[in-house]
Length: 515
Image (cartoon, rainbow, N blue to C red; front, side, top):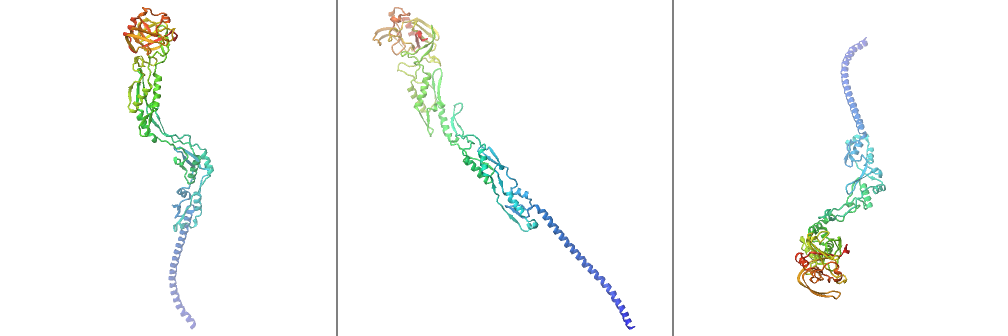
């Protein structure tokens, strides 16, 4: 019983303890639950962190899967976060150049396709190598440490192909020319024709070498100039001729104008410059030989002395009057004196508006004609004495009107020494009571007088009265009883000539054979 009661009494105690134990366990459960919640939270947070970090990693890896890592520089250019194509653009290696352009010296472009000479750049390939070498698994390392890369861009091309292309290209065909000094179109002044820089290639080897070297250094836009050595350059430029041009124009304006009554001849400009010899200091000398050539040209053009002439005869119509040693009418320039005078005028350096050439003169006889009678085709005019030696007829015309119509006796034709020669003579002196005394080539002598002497030659031929003929003139008297060469006239006719015909009047004598 006792045992049972102990057990029993223990039971309440046990029961009490049991109840107490139940209360304590509830508190523990609460603490344990709290601890479990914290663990869950921490685990969840850790899991979240893992998820976030892991997710961020994979997002970053996905982002940088086709890009350079952050902090990456290539050849000094930041390409971090850039795609390969973007990096190519930044570095300028994206596109292969398509053309090579070479500009000629005048700016004309000559274009070549780079593919035709196998032109390549290594830059894009080099960048590709760098791009491929990036470890994108550690993409985040770019935020911790920078990556620096560099490469040299190599150029490759087929030199032989390029040079053949250059050789076959059309570079131009304009020849280089020096500046020139010459007259303008109107021949009124000297002007400078500028130099021409041609575009024709004169040294192909130098051109090929220059283009090849340019391409090798990456230059695909090439400009040719005078220093490339492939062009011929002007040796004389406009500036080199400016002083000479001014000096020439200063002299070019000088002029000497010769008066030929019906016209003038002016020595100036181009013709003058043939005579003038310029010096470097602007002064000049006169080339007398060239001056004489100019005077000779004037004489050839304007001299009428000792020349055949067209003439309208009263009875025969148009004839040609021949020359003869006795006939002295006409204009005859004294070339030596005229040249001396010209040189003197030019050496003074002053223009002369009007000057006469110097004509030959004996001191008492001038080898000239009638100024008012001069024209391009004639120097006899409309006032003259006409003598038909065949018909033994004389006329005097004054300004085209007949003033005298008479017969004469001329030199006897049976003797050459006595025959009156045809030609154009000039009435150049007059006398009254003239004693005519002379001896001819035949030995004939004469000594007689006339009242009116009208001299028409330098050899004693004159128009004079011959009173001893008793009024018989004309016909064929001259053939058997002619004069010694003079023109015999009646007293009245000789007096008329003496009184009315001016000095210098041409006297035209001819035979019918002159037709």
